[in-house]
Length: 146
Image (cartoon, rainbow, N blue to C red):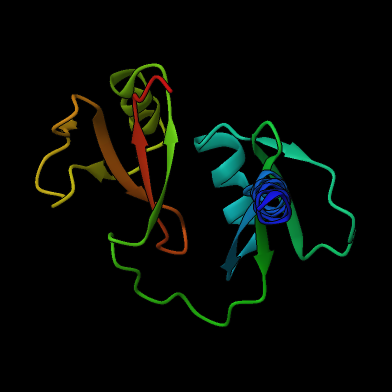
């Protein structure tokens, strides 16, 4: 019986250690025009550009969290349509202030259906808007206070 308990305990520790080692690292978007897309993420989305190891003029990396990155990679031959259901999200202190920032860049944004520029409110009270990057990737901006 002690042997079974010891084996079970070791298995629990092993599985816990495996889970603890997993974390989100980066997201990559494949783009047609690296210069245009990099400017969008740096200037419009206000992400911090970080050093990338390739130094080949085909990559731009941005910090999007403590240990999380967005990799923008050139080489796409054409822009393809993207469904709004496939999107990534950023949280900001104020969706309204960020919307004003988007207006200053003449960036189109709106609710899920893109029928209004007014922020949509989720059932949990989080406000959100949606926009697209230069290649049509959908981005949600919300005021989640994590």
